[in-house]
Image (cartoon, rainbow over all chains, first blue to last red; front, side, top):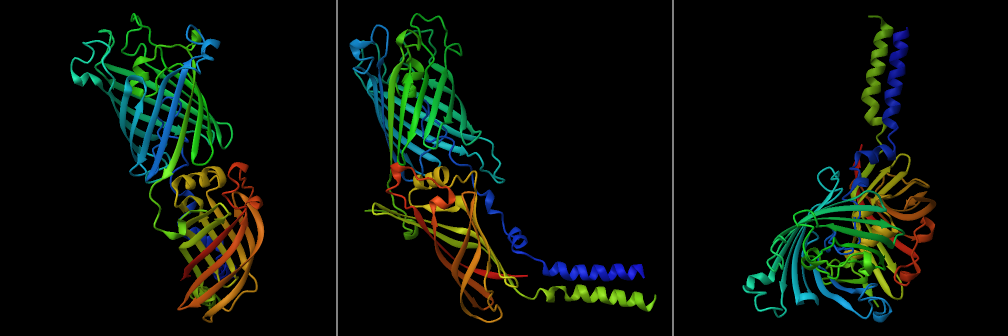
Amino acid sequence: MMKIATIITLSVLVTSLAQAQSADSLMKTLTDTARIRSVNPTFKSTHIVLSHSTETQKKHDLDLRIRHHFGDIGGEFGSAHTLYGLDVATDLFIGLDYGITDKLTVSIGRSKHDELFNGYLKYKLIEQGGGKNGNMPLNITVLGQMGWIARQPFTTTEFATYANRFSYFLQPIFSRKFSQRLSLQVAPAVLFRKNVVDVRDPDNLLSIGFAGRFKLSKRLSFIADYTLINGLNRPTDLPQQFYNPLGVGLEIETGGHVFSLNFMNSEYIAENSFVADTQKSWKHGGVRFGFTISRNFTLFKSKNKDIQTKIY
Amino acid sequence: MTKLKQLGYLLFGIAIASAPFSSKAQNYIASNIQANLFSSTPVEDIKAQSNKTNGVIVSKTGEVAFQIPIKSFEFGKKLMQEHFNENYLESDKYPVATFKGNIEPNINWAKDGEYTVNVKGTLTVHGESKARTIAGKITLKNGKASVYTSFDVACADHNIEIPTLVFTKIAKVINVKISGTLSPKN
């Protein structure tokens, strides 16, 4: 009798189970769309303070970037006589960055220092949260930047061969967004150059960059980067003292524009210049104020009418 | 084998055989429902679109559920899309918007035709839930159910802050349109 009771109970159960399919269980039969695509951007912009970030331009977006480094705040060249460096521009930079695809960015730019023209290619290899299972832990971007010094030579021997005007900066960049607030980055690099003053200063200069962002609010972040150069393959006892560049700043985003207000010891803006030639220190008043203005333009409108934006 | 035992097995057999029939009332699902956003101010009109919305309807109970992946919305300007995800909807934290509810009163699913319905339920956007009754249209034809609805979502209802700096460009109330065809599934 017990067996029969069990069987009857079971049969009732089977019937009721079949009827109990709910919206929730049905939803589970569909692909879980909650785990779609990568995480939101690790950095707000393609640059941090001095260094590049792992970010690239969005497809068909053109970024007009204007950067300015003022003079020494203190020391011999600073103080009230130069309004704490604001009378001086150690370097100015105007550049255009364009996204050929979401992953590949091309750029041209020109600096006041050395009348340096630079062009770079930047390619995003791996995106955090990307990959087949969406579990990629890092962003990896590679950067190749060429510099061409266009100014007149200071001495008759300076650019004895024309090739000495060119330098090449190669850098793989690794970053990770640890939380909504904190992103960190490491970027080893090598700079190939010819116009070296001291024979003991290596032509192929190694460096390691460290950078980070801490979001103070949705639109305001604290950013910093430090590039370690001295003591890698550059001797620390050169007659001309070089320093490791350190920049800190506040980054303000206003939708379309990104402003950053920075303090740094490096006089120059392009990697090809500041990695090799930073001669000022945070001590002795060598720190300076600088700013970056970045404005993005979408060059090609989508043909899909359902996503077009109309400005009146 | 006793007669009772045989009866038991017979009952069990009937139960299993009849299981599919007892849930004869059709269920409907789709994973490619289209969702459109429209924000309009005197300064700027902004549109976005996604076609990755999941939707299910249990016809027997009139239960309805929709799930929109926030990151699937595409904007004409990629930077706008980035701001939408990072600053407004915070899609790393809240990856989906959902609506779950019941069609009240339920419609006659056996008969083809166009039905105007009210769905009473909960809309969850940006992690904030709000009880809503949303009006829509269900069209039954050839065993498939087409759905269409257009409703407004107030940013403030879901704790979405729009800073004063850009408030002239983004509307306080966003129009949402959902349309798609759900296929039968048992």
